[in-house]
View 1: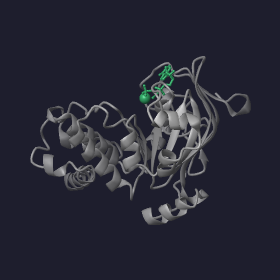
View 2 (view 1 turned 90 degrees about the vertical axis):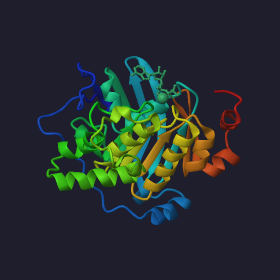
View 3 (view 1 turned 180 degrees about the vertical axis):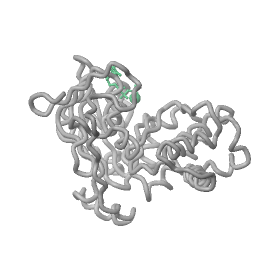
Length: 303
Ligand SMILES: Nc1ncnc2c1ncn2[C@@H]1O[C@H](COP(=O)(O)OP(=O)(O)OP(=O)(O)O)[C@@H](O)[C@H]1O
Ligand SMILES: [Mg+2]
């Protein structure tokens, strides 16, 4: 339901349903953008500040309520194409909530309400009737806890492509191999693709989940603390693969690990109590933060 001032309310009685929220008979498709610039081109644009062409997602005055509880206040920020954006802040500040706005995953926790604007390649994704299945394919997500499906490694990765209509053993095998290679897991599992995914280690399971997300060729990948449950070796593998896929996928990553944010991200967004305190190139934000609150947080004075 759309109310005054563009506020979008969603009330689904069935959390967990993929396309929660008001769904008209024919969902409104999102237009495919012009070809993405190369990583180098995007980087060059971003180095001097963001340009319209380099934006994947853009929030303006974005607010979010869970019932009567307001979790996000007037957030204005952007996610640049082919960049890695880190979202940091203390527990409960709204990092996951912001990430879940980008593909409308918050709609799975009704009643929720958005206000403000959120655009994906310039198109309003908060308007009623947006094709949420298409949005979530194009803006994929990986969660803190690896959640492989109770099926084989192969079937986990082939799940999305099959749903999209990819048929034929050869075609599916090629898609699965490519996704597993991009997720840096191929060499470890190529001889046991038919075995249960639940038999993999925690770090392998998380890379499998990333492979599963990559298999449907998302344009943006949202990662919510993907390595927080992993040991340093498994964490390093996840970080390496994020840096590898950056050339073709835009990444937004929530992390509590300051070193991780500093190591892998191009841009950092700092949230506190549902508000954006500071954002900018990662190096600058960590070495010369503009805001006292940012400095206090990154130096460990709170949070
Ligand atoms: N599904 C939900 N229903 C109701 N309230 C929620 C829901 N998810 C989050 N919240 C509330 O929104 C606020 C922000 O929570 P969120 O999970 O986004 O924080 P976070 O920064 O990701 O925290 P953490 O670092 O602990 O994961 C909190 O007050 C939380 O209680
Ligand atoms: Mg969270």
